[in-house]
Image (cartoon, helix red, strand yellow):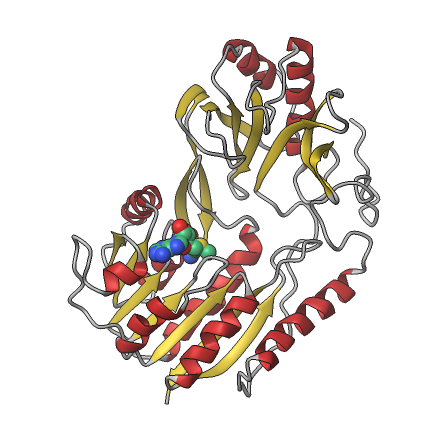
Length: 395
Ligand SMILES: C[S@@+](CC[C@H](N)C(=O)[O-])C[C@H]1O[C@@H](n2cnc3c(N)ncnc32)[C@H](O)[C@@H]1O
């Protein structure tokens, strides 16, 4: 194996478009991300007397538990590659087999899958012409369990599943093991990873993870935080606000697979999670049962619809505290109006996009919620992403 162990220089930094901050000292990355958050808040005139320094990620390297690699080539009709899109050239794919954001075993699997597919002479899927076979390779793993799930995404067509399984089972890995090998068939025109049909070639279609002392079953397509140790710190800080306040009911809106919902449920009271994706809701309910938590429940639906009473399952309770962890576009005015009307004492806002968070905080400030605490988190070193946590109080 030929892995670059000089972690200061990534071999792919000149070509790979995956990281924005390659070659930039970590302290500088933190300072720039912190400054960006402050500027978003300033732009929206968000008043907050308690802004904390940015929290660094516990691990700078090898922190990602999920990668979606693309099959392609460097030049038109060149040799098959597998990895990430090239900087500034979306049609070219760089074989990112020495990526420092993932564990060595992901790099080993990527190399082996590429060699297997080259030997078989399988064609890449052509995004424009919509023909060919190989589309994506999705690797996921349980950081705390070492369980790896391999999912090859192809168009319909012949694929040697048995040979693929044998090749992967013969691999010598460092400190993880492959617990499931899947083939997803995707004939959609869009370049996103979409599942028309999934075949379990070996093992199971989920892996197990442990976060905040809770067990989670994570299925092939459900959302899960990609930097588990960093997310754990952020979520622990978020639910620690519940210790400071007597509370009966907590709403966890945009709850995904219910990681925060369950951490909040451990603090007592009744916790209700709302999430759009039905598969994530089923996983959340299953996980809560696995963890023996009886004081949380989950509702599938759009946050705005559920809070407007336009969903099959109605909520009669009023929340004392609301937790928000929206996707990158933020919550937005329509749903925020419903949230404000609930009149909760406190809102705990977790954001993966502080720009849209500042827009939402502005709206909330206008309608009587003061931001009393704010802290940025660097959960994705070397990338341009930054997370933030805010606590709001009704005044
Ligand atoms: C940042 S993730 C939250 C993850 C979650 N806290 C967890 O621990 O798994 C945002 C979630 O919002 C969901 N979502 C997006 N739009 C939504 C909407 N309009 N109503 C409800 N949920 C939505 C997404 O499916 C996704 O799971």
